[in-house]
Amino acid sequence: MQVFLQTLVGGLSLGAVYALVALGFALVYRTMGLVNFAHADVLMVGAYVASTFTMTEHLPFAAAAAAAIVVTALIGLVIERMLRPLEGKDFDLMLIGTIGFGIVLEALATLVWGATGRAVPSPVQTAPLHLLGASIPSYDLVVTAVALVAMVALSLFLERTRRGVAMQAVAMDYDAATAVGINVGRSNAIAFAIGAGLAALAGALVGPLLYVSPTMGGSIGIDGFAAAILGGFGSIPGAVVGGVVIGLISSFSAGHFHGYSDLVTFTVFAVLVMIRPTGLFGERTVVRA
Image (tube, rainbow, N blue to C red):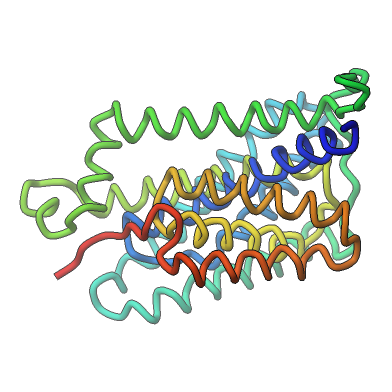
């Protein structure tokens, strides 16, 4: 029972991180119909920025995470603005462009922070929580709680604000949204900025759990991408559920299969996608003429 609880909590915290990554993928895809392949490297930059402000400038973890979100949101705006001239002209070049931005970000991170990476200390120094004989790290609970708050905030933004409703209108029908006067370019820019901010938050949260390095975005990005596909690419609820499912599968497979956890995780993922090709909640993307 103790091992089960510890594995469950660890899986939920990891799943919360994957859900944040998947939400960033989903938000851009449902608004623009574009898979942002630079997303994982934006997460890596967010992890580095947050760890730098925490370890070098000695800022509180919350302030460092906020700074990382601001920096990566600006990166997201820059990426969207540079891709905007290609929208409606050559979509394949837009996809290639996001890959190129990812390569550039990884190279810049290596130049700025080096290739060796760094271990980030946990910002929560309180004793583990003891529940039913299990010792649960306090930071795992913090990660889950922060990610949950971010997901609720995103949901409220999309459902309760004019800008959020406008973004959903763009996602439902691009041409109709343009016809009624919605600034599609602005909606796309906001989607990129929010997606990048979510990636930075995920990077900041996962930094103390994993080793921060220029290549960390690859592994986390793949799991987040898988979570987005599993939930239904472009679906906001699907991204959350997919992230939690991938996190739980990874956690329990690591506990039982050790070095083969990735193999087990993606085997289960492949089976689920074969059963439900459009994902658990179905694919959601912008409708274009």
